[in-house]
Image 1: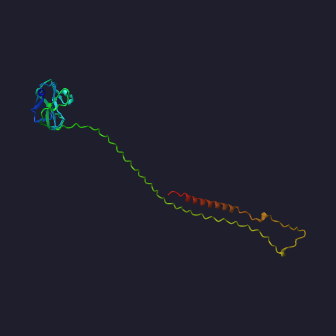
Image 2: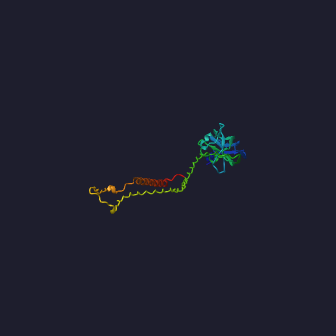
Image 3: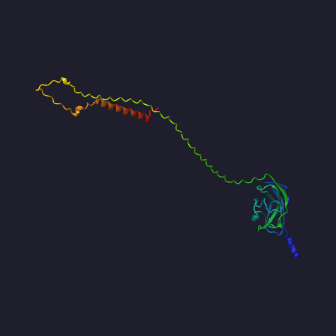
Length: 262
């Protein structure tokens, strides 16, 4: 039992940090006093971290390693932190805040990692010191979203308006001009030629002819001699009058059907 107690005392680890500024600028580099009490420790890797609240495990911040490089890697890459070959360490290390994180109240502590890069136990965590990070709040990098291409609005199709139907102007119906009806000329009536009547000789005037006087035979008139002579002039005038009448009627009809333009 005494041997176990001696072994625990020999393997005890203590990590502490001091001299942290109470106010740290967002882009300020600062140094802090570090003490690692572990005489029997093998290789150790030290890292300074900011976190908030005090129960948080969301660590951030940069540590200047042995190669003068600012390291801000996850614990799975603990081999890049400040390396201590073996045993303890007492001295100053440099740190700075992550300017891409928001400012405000934080806590600061030191974490010790072994080569396995496993999560540090409580013995491998230093005390926590409150500090305040000040400075302009970093502007988040805008994410450029593609500008949507505007959809062209179709132009409204004009509603065709019906063309007004021209109302025809009524033209007055021309009044047919009445042409004077030619008065037909009277057809001359042919005057019949009187048939000469035989001259009556009084009986008393008859004188006995001498016996040797020849008695004239009576003459029989033919049918042609009984007809009156044809009046050809009357016929010609009648035909000409009919032609004039027909022509006059045709002119009247033509003027009515095809009136002369106004």
